[in-house]
Length: 392
Ligand SMILES: Cc1cc2nc3c(=O)[nH]c(=O)nc-3n(C[C@H](O)[C@H](O)[C@H](O)COP(=O)(O)OP(=O)(O)OC[C@H]3O[C@@H](n4cnc5c(N)ncnc54)[C@H](O)[C@@H]3O)c2cc1C
Image 1 (tube, rainbow, N blue to C red):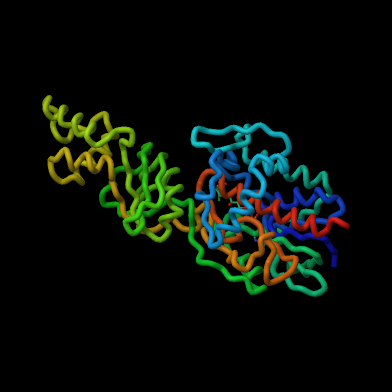
Image 2 (image 1 turned 180 degrees about the vertical axis):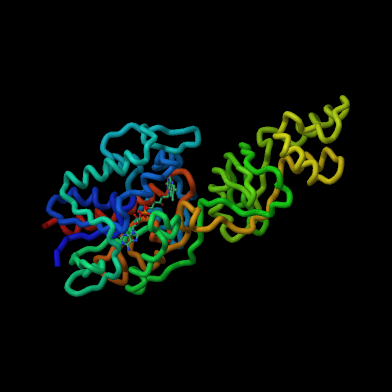
């Protein structure tokens, strides 16, 4: 059986980041085992193929975890800029109006290319199209891939979550950790399209509006964002829906303000002036919102009342009945319970077993937060292993 110092299971964003950082100790023999025929396939698809790697606003309120204190330590251990420089070298980035940071190439695949080139130059072995079936301990780790088995002193589980199984992240790899006694917190799809009551949005399919959208759960405002909402035949999509979805995975209310820059009084006055100058009810919203939205609002108001119409323009609520599920989600909420994970991301239940990325119970908002978690956790694991192996 071939022996390595470190075996990283999963060649996604966190696994590749971990491997690149580990190459700083040139004496380490490193193997990445990846189930897919290519490493970094999901990374190359991120941000609509543009690779939104982090955000100008990196505050911790953009993350959720059963142990947010540990997630925070890892996320802010090193600045996002330094982590990126460590992984991608000197680069030029583009930041959009919403603070989302991309490689200037606007090509997520260029990030994968840089990481893979660095690993190739450093002589890191990458075994593709190979799924790890089991890990056991006997004088080190035995990593069982069916036909082949490998030995390692350190193992990093970087197998991702359960979102979008076409990237071979179907949740089956959690059992590799569960076999060591690790627990799984409840899993939910996040950054995902929302199913809603469709009674009031029939006929709006395909219409995109830039709005202020808010998520309420149990009547409490959980989150708000100014972004695009796209109406669909099942509910809502678009960046606003993605952003709010993390709070609405178990239901709630999404409230849309179609005219966020105007107060109710100002809109009321405008509509009353229109009525006074002879504009009839169905037409008083013409030119103010999309005609189909105008029709939906007037139908929902149910009476010829300017106040009722203004109220719907500012607070068009839809009951969230579910999401499109893991097959459409960009990230998994929940994962391996952080209470059994030490501050260096090593298992408290098995020495020298580490975790990085989405497999853990940490998820971030839409906007570059999940890739940053993958990169920061992957490099944090590498730093700990480098420390332990510095005499090698
Ligand atoms: C379409 C899409 C767009 C996204 N866009 C963004 C974005 O713009 N910005 C952002 O911050 N986040 C984005 N995300 C989320 C982000 O991509 C993930 O959170 C991140 O890739 C997680 O990294 P990871 O290394 O933990 O897991 P992954 O990148 O999912 O990698 C896990 C790897 O493990 C492999 N694997 C699984 N089981 C085994 C096994 N048993 N043996 C061997 N290998 C195995 C898988 O094949 C996979 O390659 C997006 C996600 C999707 C799906």
